[in-house]
Length: 127
Image (cartoon, rainbow, N blue to C red; front, side):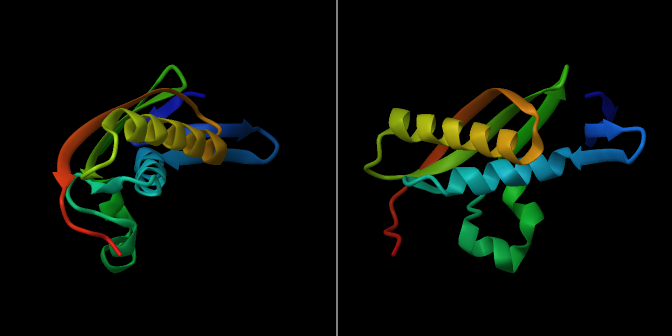
């Protein structure tokens, strides 16, 4: 895998068929969707939740996420808001595992790091 430019990475190359490239924005969206599926995650930093994605658009979901690809490996930084009462270490570990698995399964890229920042605690009740 080689870096084509700052925002797109080749994930598959076959001279007979062509290339498949993925934008880092897509990797960030995958990470955001995966993180917000974890119980205890109120939203991404910036208050973007899965429910708001349909109204605001997919690109808004990548807010609070930084993706970098180096030597064919992805490093992801995720900033989340956590629901009050959930274990920070346990929820963070679940976010790391879910984000890593989702990116690797959907893109074929190898994830080297998933760094989680707790941006705030959400006191609101979700129904």
